[in-house]
Image (cartoon, rainbow, N blue to C red; front, side, top):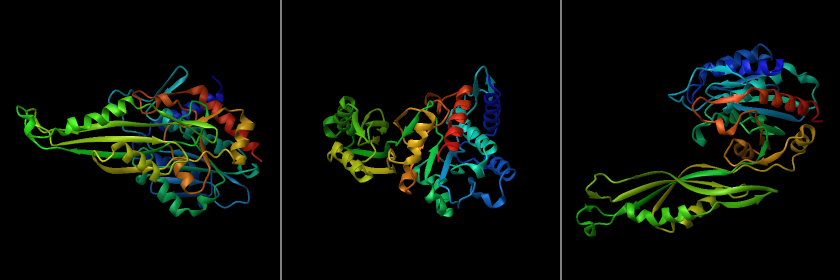
Amino acid sequence: MSSLAARLAQSTLALCRIPSPIGHEGPLADEVERWALERFRREEVHRVGHSLVVGRLEDARPTVALVGHLDTVPAHPNDGPPRLEGERVFGLGASDMKGGLAVMMALAEDLPLSELPVNLVLILYEREEGPYLESGLGPLFEKQRALRRVSFGIAMEPTDGLVQVGCVGTLHALLKFTGRSAHSARPWQGENAIHKAGPLLAELLARPRVEVVHAGFSFFEVMSVTLAHGGRARNVVPDTMELSLNYRFAPGKSLELAQEDVRALVAGRAEVTFTDLSPSGRVCADNPLYQRLLAVTGLPAASKQAWTDVARFGEWGVDAVNYGPGETAQAHQANESAPIPALAVAYEKLAAFLRGAG
């Protein structure tokens, strides 16, 4: 193991040892702020709640932002303690995304920031793992309006070492089927709301994923029922049935059109209530810094078949991609871990890009 990889592994381990489940990011934000104030001027460390921007917000050079969320999902009951084993670092958030945070912070420590062809800032924020409207990015961008002039952002979500462009949008819809109660011995005297939901569920079972090619990248539109609730007793014909439908849709489709897709599927068979609407993320293939990232690093690019804050940046007019050292399959898993060699690779690739971005 190289000295760089060993150093990044220790940094990731230290971050994993500071619990930061969503809603409890304060101690980790305090530690990151302390770290930043030891290396940056006071006016270059901006905190809003438990979110921070570190670096110069006004600079003649184009600004590149490395972006990472401080929170994790809640701990799993079977999680072991944070630790190093072989070439992996274990701990809640190791892949999603404290390994990425460790790489961001090391780059800010090591690079000659005033000599780079770009102005580097770090964005570290709370509540990414929750509802769209509760993210710490919103208040941060509202308070620090200069962030809207960032030229290029790199969200250091786990990407298995790929540059992942764009992201699918997501919405949730509550579908409420209504029937009429009756004794289950005489169901003809009622109307079974669960049975009424059956044809729609059968249609979803048979529904294939829909490939959409956008800006040269393939995204898949999918609809899935993720929760179901109905009935109030074993001997009563249920008068209501509720399904939670999650729809993932490709870049280029608006939230309004995505909602119309759901209404067309339901076709009046249930009452539809939409919640937690999150737009898709733009594929910024025409951004010169994105093009330079691929040219300098030789990294392959692929579509992001999930939602990330690349979409939120796009809503503010900021081009961004996803690239981080974590493994997507480890995100939100019990005994989460991250590969240590990948930490060093991400550091080296991003250092080369930042030095050669001019």
